[in-house]
Amino acid sequence: MREESEGELKRVVIIGGGPAGLMAATQLLKSDCEIILLDQKASVGRKFLVAGDGGFNLTHSENKLELMEKYDSDWMKQAVRTFPNKDFIKFLKQIGIETKVGSSGKIFPEDEIKPIQVLNAWKQHLEGRVQFQLNCRFVNFEGNELIFERDGKTEKMSFDYLVLAMGGKSWPVTGSDGAWTQLFEQKGIALTPFQASNSGLVLYENWLGDLEGKILKNIRTSCGNQSCAGDLVCTNYGLEGKPAYAINGALRKMEKPLFKVDLKPQMPLQKVFEVLKKAKNPSQGLKELKLGEVAVFWIKNFVSKQRFLDPKELAKAIKEFPIGIKGFRPIEEVISCAGGVSGAEISESGELNKFPNVFVAGEMIDWDAPTGGYLIQGCVSSGFVVGKAIKLSMINE
Image (cartoon, rainbow, N blue to C red):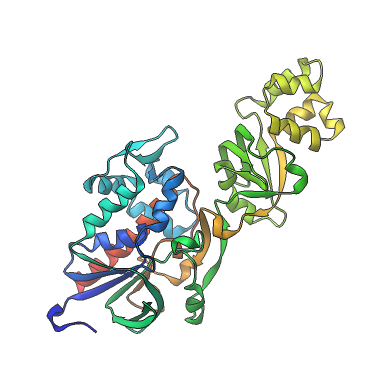
């Protein structure tokens, strides 16, 4: 229970110290309320730091409309419209983190600024107003009371507003273990099952060959309305890389997932045909097109002899090379996941329709986006929307 010295201050409790929870707390700093942030780990921002290991994409430099289109959820599109990349960059500068635009449009911290420095600057910005309580595992909420475990003991804490930003189910070692889903189902909150997103693609064994570690450079993948250019990396199970991750959403919708690869996207079909036609044989044509080892292996093993010997058909195969996949990597090892609380269960401010003053943010909500800064941007945008809504609600009371 509260101590008498706290008077009539409203109490906002935030569960989860990732970018969504931190941004929700940030929006409440100038409000006359008590802010308590709980995390089940010994420190906040664990997934935030892990995400920085492979290149710290904070957001992307696209214009607002282009940015919004990277999200498959109408709720998240509106959240990003409300708090777009420019606002996030402005906030980062406010806390002392200068950013730069990479060659592909991604936004990174300036050189020499490590992920831990970004996190520490954000924590320092919150310290003094936000009470961080760590090693606290969420159990339940009933009425206006939060139930959690700390040091093996069950504790209760009252709240006026509760923000749940506990993550999805990918990278559970960071705390995003999806354990909350069972409770939500018991409470009658509709959930979309979690699925691996931005995942490597598992190929059938006969596609693997002796290609592990080889790179398929400068290609373009396409599936449905999703497409992406870049490099694919061969692994002992299949393919990794942005062009693989970017088509996950379309592949998940297919009963028999299949995508196409343009093995020579920088050259039009007619030009590819002309090179093959002039070559003394198909193999020489592939060499003149400068196709790499992976592409040549696939073409020679999976293009019929009849098509291989016909320059026109071989050109078509090179420009639209079909690959069926066996599946995706386990959700525990992928960058992000799709699924979570259904958009129909929350208001435009992220408040649960069935539980007034209880909000959800971040990867708990059902949305999906590619890598390249869009994931962190989506989380901070959702946290902003929730924090702002609570601030306005307190003002209007």
